Image (cartoon, rainbow, N blue to C red; front, top):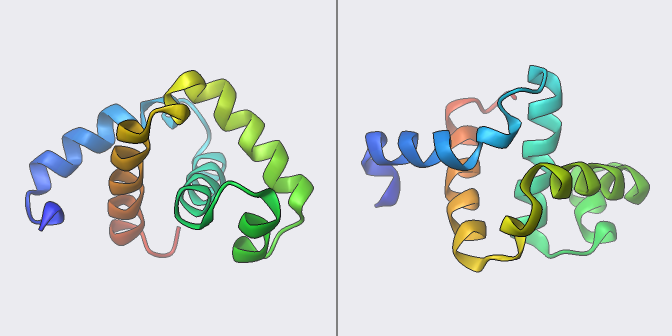
Length: 97
């Protein structure tokens, strides 16, 4: 139901994904994929690494990058919820990315 209002989702994504906007597209993709997996599958690097088929140290490195970009926002459950919506919408629009 949330995804039916494309303008709302687009506005939400613009705000919540802004910290990734200055990165190269492939860097945006990797960090967005990691952040979505982290939000969906728990906060353990091992769990996220298994879902992404990468080494846990790779996940830790990406999570440190995300913490630098997002700061305290990642501790806020409301922002995490909005991030998940924005990232799922991004994934639906760009499934190959």
